[in-house]
Length: 249
Image (cartoon, rainbow, N blue to C red; front, side, top):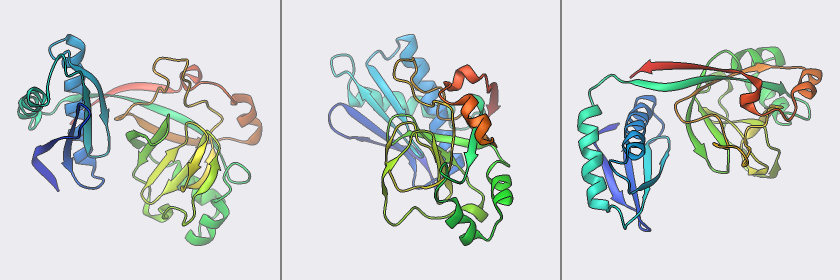
């Protein structure tokens, strides 16, 4: 359920948390995107120069602010004013479509065999399902460059592993419930790994360090081992696989 008005709370440490609903909901995330883009424009224009960072998530926004330039009460008023303007408007949301190559199965996707057994899908059928749609980037987290995408087809939606792995390689593509995601850096993780992209998703030397942003779309396509080797280590924007678009919501 989407709240009529966002719930705004102070989280301590000069942080304001704004929640629109509970759980994962596409329409709720559109609300997040609307307010995020509006507040980013305000921040860039200097109208509210106290905003230092805005982090969008599945159903919420977190604002980090400078207490010497603004305060929680002022931000609360700004948020509610902006939401009143945006709530019932259809606005063009900036979005890019990214085509991401993936080598599926084998050493690239060590959990795929178990998934095929559970879903009773063939290798080819699984890849066809996973690559058949555009996924929305709901948010970035829990490690640098991790891309949370949804929603996965019910036929291949399996829960997280009961026991997380201590090491998952950067570029690994996984599934957890209705989500699919890409690991930007090496980290522990509990997602079922189905493949790996040769593309470098996260580079701290670049600005921004990750090209994909919340609200963007991602579509996967399969590649062979030979193709994987040819593209290995190429940064996403250098692959020239994005298409800019605007969608009204």
